[in-house]
Length: 452
Figure (cartoon, rainbow, N blue to C red):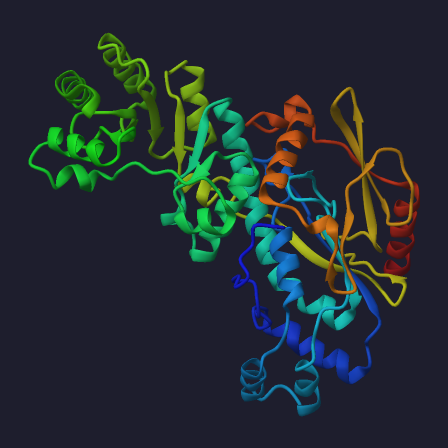
């Protein structure tokens, strides 16, 4: 079963929506619009800094849909707004999601205009979901896509998520930690995320621990005594002098002073790592690892790797936590069909594709070579990406994945990306995504109809 607590944040969040979703629901109700609709969640364009996105957040969507109900307190609040009639409020008390959901598995690379998720349900049900689905899939896809770049830059070194304290809110801190781990990060400093999602947790010490002691030597000695095999933070005062203190403690205390590594958190990290390694090795402390942190992102990690600095692992915080270079996606949730009729939006630059869809991924010699975006019932060469994860409002086995399942998929799928797409700089050519002839014809027909 998925790593998701029974009392999840996602339960009973019917009012986690924008007001206009509810006003539209009442209008649909009064006007008799109750037929089945299809809504598609996708990203219009990739940020310039991204060659691909890593889909993430489906588990939270499915969990939310399973428990979506309006409580008596919810209905009472809506009544207090003076916008909603008693008949509509009464119907909200029995609201439940009864539709189908089709989605790309978490940990799958996706590209512009490809559906990440599609909902097929009575119009009122499908409409209400927009805000929450976008919120959760957007956040985790942003986070996973950023983390995948950091992990790639680190090559075979460990990367630990240090981002909680500056991520924008508690829910984001949890969901981002989940997405980071799915994308290949080794673990997190976030203890609650560790508990809820079974993510390995890591931590060393803060500068404040060193500062409360009269001298650094006693701070190191006491911490290593309490936590044998710990990692010590050495840049509170003078990093190289701190290494000399560690060497002296090792020589004096022997087995009573045991550490596994040191963390450097400031200065020129690559140069400092070289000097720290030299001192440790000269004292025979070859087993002591060097862990680097402090303002890092994928570019900072890549620079350290390029300089062949002897860094064994990285703590990456704020810049990964908030995805500094690409903090948002042009993600939308659009109506594409109603009552078995294709629907389309034709605003310049915001045209949509009609109907329920499927994406087929073509591969050659273990490398992705292109995607075909087509109608849901079309058959194309390649591997279909969207799969049914909910039917009649119930979770299907296809959505019953652990976070480890998703993590393994992400690693496997990332290995299939064409080499230029893995680069940190923009690829010279975008990954090819083509419309099938049939889908292109359907779109063209609707464009002509609405522009006539």
